[in-house]
Length: 342
Image 1 (cartoon, helix red, strand yellow):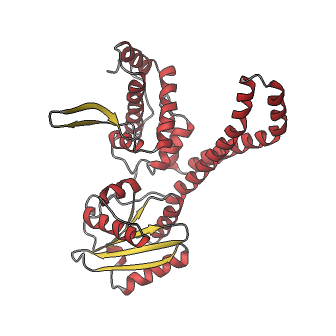
Image 2 (spheres, helix red, strand yellow):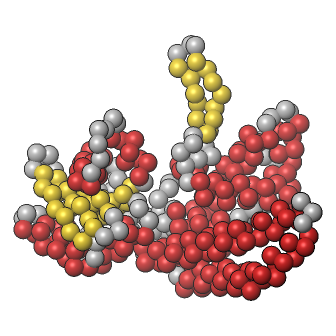
């Protein structure tokens, strides 16, 4: 697995606020935070080249800087592809991390957001991991995964009303609806399978991605969709060093809720998290309970002890992520042990 470096000795930070058509840039020269410059350009190849020209005019060495972007999906990954080709140091930060680091803010603008990103890099430059993954492959995977998700949503939107009509005893209308949309339904099912095939082909083209995918799917409960999405959100497992951090990102890690001696609430998960990953983990947890005897025994025992079903299910999600990280880090397929887990 590729390892991230930590940018400790950079001379400047460039915060980039990315939108579909434009980039707002803030340059902060380290050891002189008052030395702050702003720039605005287009989100295109010409705009990226103009940015480098503008930075050179500020008399900074491009190789000694850190380019920091908020993770905005496709648009930010395209910028990362350019920075990678230029062999420049860059990193992505989740939007929720940036938002929480700002504290109380009044008003919002792209210029202000660019400064906030640069300031975050200035303050936490020694803790920021650089991105070193092949973003072009992750970008393609993300596009195909999102495309498949839209196909599935469209298919569900067509089939759900038919099921409701059947449940309400309207068989004639249900049959008519099936006939009217059978061609579209068939096309959507074909499109879903095609997107899945394209994702698998893309993964197989890269030795590292293919190895990690096979390691993930060797674990009971981890199917194609969960394994693929884990590759995307973890950037081939380069963004998270342990399962606790990944569980926190997914919104399944329990945190304490207490203060002093009067407030002692139960541990609970945070509403912040990747809802798509959480949903896939939920399906994976239900699956592993049915097909993994070790997890099934654990789930049954905890329920017999009076534990809430969702609480135990959440623990299974955490165990699933722990298995994934351990298997990928070890580099060998998952092996089921005979002993019970607590």
